[in-house]
Picture (cartoon, helix red, strand yellow):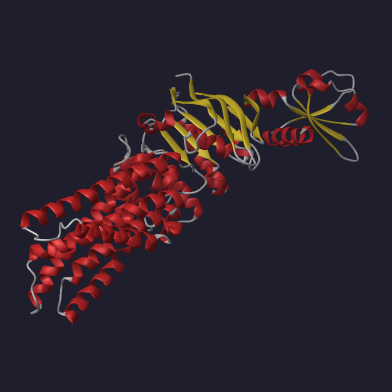
Length: 214
Length: 288
């Protein structure tokens, strides 16, 4: 699996220059807005999108068929992509937060405490986890190109899900008198829900790839 | 281990094609040539051996292990070279080395770079800039660099020029000097098969038609050129295939020694593997 992950990283080098340009644009935009909080959100979004780029390169090369002749099994193919998604979102988070702090040094705008910003960015990261956790089984089933067309549907589904969850919380009155303890409990529940959804998505993808033929 | 690959009753059904109860065993230490026309079932058989498709029936042993393609230990000892290179376009030779080093326990970096130098593969270029032949050479270099015991080629040499193909065949001949090593070579190029293979496996429309020792095949099979009258006197059990033209009848026979000293004094030429493939397949088409 380490070999597969290395291959993905080598592959993504190709798009590194484009992503550096995009990051530069985001930095300029933050200076223009005099608000750096936009930057980590964008890095998380753009880094997480690289998972589709990586899957697209593999599909174009037909790599999975070859990979299965190496000492690698079908589960490894899925595991590598889920791990890569985790790493990409983590990298987006770290780069975004570092960028945020650095931009903040130059901007004399409203400064939000770093911890609060980290929580906001973590919430955005959780949304992207949910979006790609919804999408990856579709990619393994339909291929990248067809699945790419469902990206918008995945976004809508995740936002609808989040909206429904918030509605339920309001309905149950859990949002009233939000104490620190209740806030932490809600955040923890959201985090556990995201992790469980991610794990569920992994097992669905494994099931799909076990049945796939090359 | 007696057999490197043992296939028994392999069946795979598609809408318009059936791989029908295919059974054969590839002796360890040999080179087996797998021939047949396009769509005969060669790639389907190889995919089933490698567990890339689900079989409907039958058993497959690889290096003595049932369902060996699902076993990591077995796959450490197998190399597969397809007709295309499946390394992603952005990778370079060094990247392939680093990736394989993390994939195979017995990856031999020096051997890999030696082959890359021998095949004149540019180190600074990405795979996408390689010619088709260079891509196949890269796959071959990788296949020969992890102490594999079994190499499976799925029409891999078709895109190589004759000089390189000859060099590659020599490499396989060297590889086979170790009696533990086996090559299973699927190809359309019958001259290559004739040059290096010990056994010939012929498949047609999903059915196995022939699996024989190559030398015995070339010794026994012959092409008889005769008149129609002489053809009528031929023992039908010897006839494998027939081609007629205005002037004569050409007959592929499976025991040319039996015709020596025959009263008809037949003209008998040695049959090549290509002749055998053409006659057997054409004869089978007529029967169908």
